[in-house]
Length: 184
Image (cartoon, rainbow, N blue to C red; front, side, top):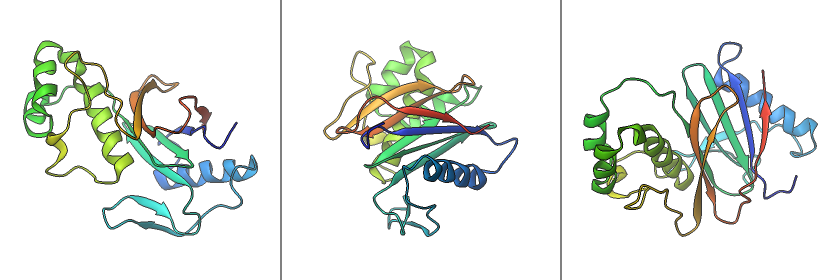
């Protein structure tokens, strides 16, 4: 594995908390020789993006849905989101948080709600800006419903081993290949 290959860890919240799974993923990377030590000084950027002050060159992003948990690590900014498809107020959420292009696509393709949502959330985690009033001001898809590849980032849809769909947002210079590790 090269440094440019992101590392995706997944686990179940049945056995450990999110913090416990994060510690387990960090320890595994130390054991594999990827990290020099388990970082402990977790802090936030002014925009609220978490990072480890004692290992600032390592970037990470966490998501969970239901009992499924994932964490993505890399040498450059990353964002990840997973969502168990479920019934929700999709139209109301889309009116509030989706760009008009995304709303129009969703009206014709209702199954696109969760792929669009996970891409948007992974993007704001990658950028560090979070979900705010600007969330509806950008589109993650083009007029054909394809995920946009922006200046400096790329989207990679994926499905966890347990079947939970999600999207990664990676810095463009990172490899599209990623290593997957199960923590269960």
